[in-house]
Amino acid sequence: MARICELTGKGRQVGHNVSHANNKTKRTFLPNLQNVTLISDKLGKGVKLRVSTHGLRSVEHVGGLDNWLLKSKSETLSLRARRLKREIEKASKAA
Image (tube, rainbow, N blue to C red; front, top):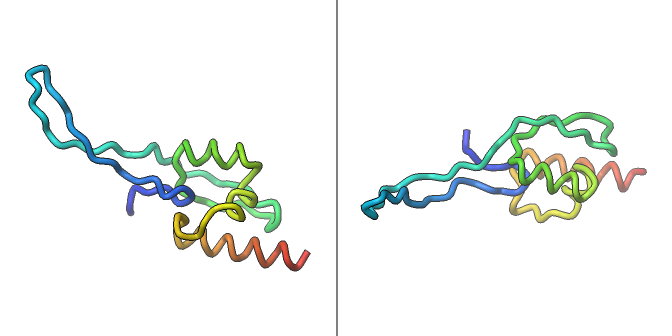
């Protein structure tokens, strides 16, 4: 399982540990991923996603999962999130 946020696409970054003697060794910075159940208002159900804490704050700021998915580009979303976005678009057109 990749360590990538399903909503924002945020993944690992690469950098260096720098010692006092200025020796540099490679290291990775991993995103703070959480398994979260987000509620979709239009679908009327909860959806389990693996989201970074930054992404979770962004979803709350925009006004919920439905608004986030409708405003976001499909390229940054995971396959599961893209399918969810299509379901929400269909539900909003039907209503």
